[in-house]
Length: 246
Image 1 (cartoon, one colour):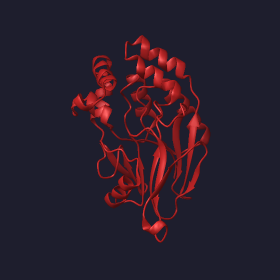
Image 2 (cartoon, rainbow, N blue to C red):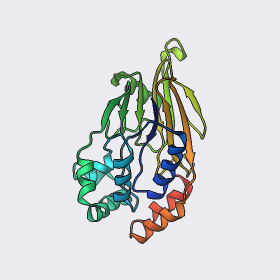
Image 3 (tube, helix red, strand yellow):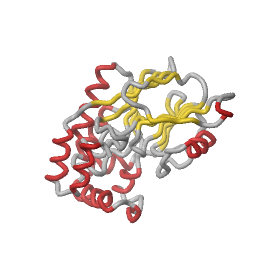
């Protein structure tokens, strides 16, 4: 199966539209979303509607759960908590209903899908090899997809290599992995708020027949997304970070 994997859209309509246009050019069969449609940005309804229309599988993320009141936002940063409160006041009933129907993990075509990690699908950031090792032990599938960190990266554990321990790295534009052997955790990066120093929207192209994964970046009008954040009265830092990808 030829699949596009998206994650962490965060109410950034401009970024999502650009990614969906790029995905369409690749002729994928399905689109999978790893969650966090809302939060931070100014277009939660538009983004959720596009995901509902275009994605065959979708997970719920921690910001989506915060909107629903299922998570305590006292541990969120000040800007993130303010965005949750704003979204609660401005989101439609249809968006709330859709997000409330989702789960934080799933399995498709022999691939595990997790918003955050296999052992904690809601909260855990997988940024180091010890966290990846724990993820490999927790997941049932050989290949897992994770989001949440907003960083395009991968981890792999190959039998007989590196002492059998996990290795990992960030994945830049165009990086292509052959994932037919070993255990893998793949993070597509963030559509709407990248944090790896590249402000372009990120997505992952996955082929489950050839077992390859290719990382993509898409330029978009981040100035328009930032202007929408400021016009909505959201914290200015949420607009500023879009330009630098942090």
